[in-house]
Length: 166
Image (cartoon, rainbow, N blue to C red; front, side):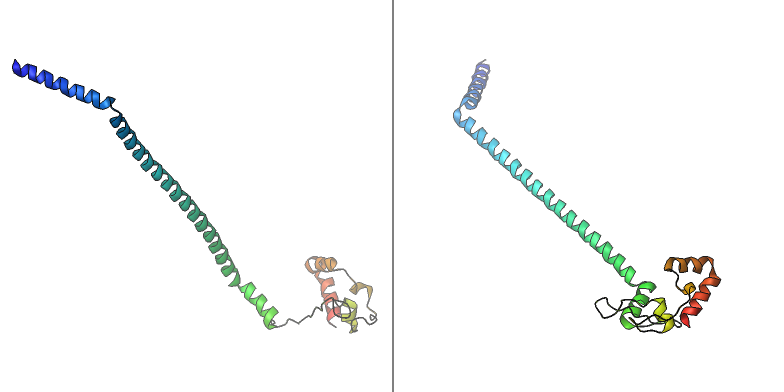
């Protein structure tokens, strides 16, 4: 029985100690301090996570921009390697011609005389600005009509082309 009383008082003493501990201001301050430290740790981690997410988003935007630039460079490279581009550059920069082609020089508008030679001067052999030679009315055909003739009236087009080349 003495043991029972001793255990009872001992439990009571522990319960009173725990009650006094929870009610003490020191325990309250220590608990609040621990909670504050835990909140600071979570806050720091949240800020760090936000910074990392922003950095990832910025790097993703940069990667997308570089990918778009890379796509444009690939398209430009493909365009520069095409046969038509190489031919055009050879014609413009190197002055090369295909067999059977003739060089036509277009003068700058700031130069003296008209910028283009008309069919009258080409057919009559006149110099730019000189009086046109007598050319039949059939040779004075507008460009759209010439194209129409090229596709749908080949005989008339050939006759005009023969006249212009003579």
